[in-house]
Image (cartoon, rainbow, N blue to C red; front, side):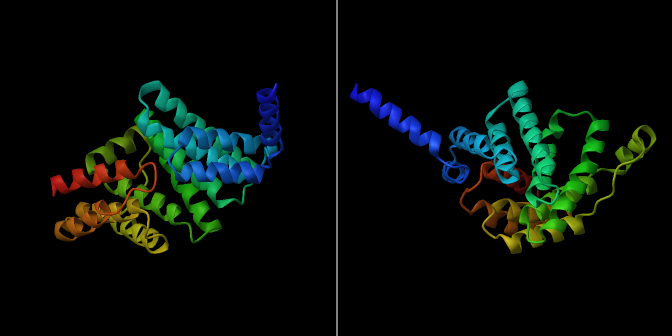
Length: 245
């Protein structure tokens, strides 16, 4: 009887918690790298406040953070859920910078499952969403990062592939390593704690045949502590680039 009363008490307390309280719990779990538990807390917050774009973005992030540990269909499904909640966040508030950014990030994570034609279409929306996010919040380091990655990818497409794409798909957007470098520099200046900005800054230097500078900058990023779910993937890219210089 006593245990039943305790269970009922805890159930009542859980039910009475506000969206803000559930969101704070989710934030703490997210910071601790407990993705599934954070997702559950954010889902509770969403039940209390179903049109809150910030909560929808946080749910999208958790699905995206799950992807590196998954494979095949499960990984794709997590990416699609991330995009689903990102788009819901935009629907909830067109002027919420992080909502547009979440769409760009989710789309970027799904490109590995797409064919060439779909990738070209996706690349255009990634740029549009990242630019919209930056226009709404000029201090968004991740919006700068996404634009840096976009320019990095577009600049790396060779002439033969670009010509073929023009014939088959009507062309590929243009990007430059200089613009990529500038976006990563700005992202780094806004938030120097994110190692992905530092590593991609260095990798871009390597793509520009500035090997000596690239080694120094990438190593700085590799020496930084992991803080985000995709930091280890970023470090793996950095190590691979160092091997190729």
